[in-house]
Image (tube, rainbow, N blue to C red; front, side, top):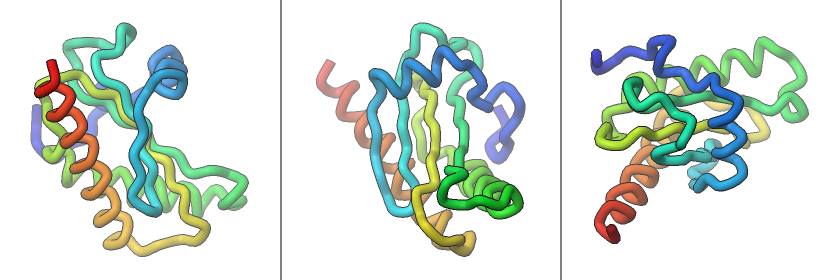
Length: 130
């Protein structure tokens, strides 16, 4: 797959995977981004690779243009740094913006890098335990 792309098949759309992720997935936090993820989901398409979704809560940002701006910034930070997550396993991850105010792109990118490094470390240690 191309390195710096975020194509349709890389987007997490499956409601079953999302429900499984929130019921039995793992989470990590690097303010202002929280990530909930699951590896080797029974519903995930094994041919796709890693999938991601992004959300900004409506109760924190009432206006859609602010929510969309923050989602675009998170998507761009993910797109440019997705190589930090190992591609050996199928990983489905949802990034949730938990900050209370709009932040500039560089702060969001720093937080995204930290979250992605934490995810990769937990996956590597999980593989090492097996």
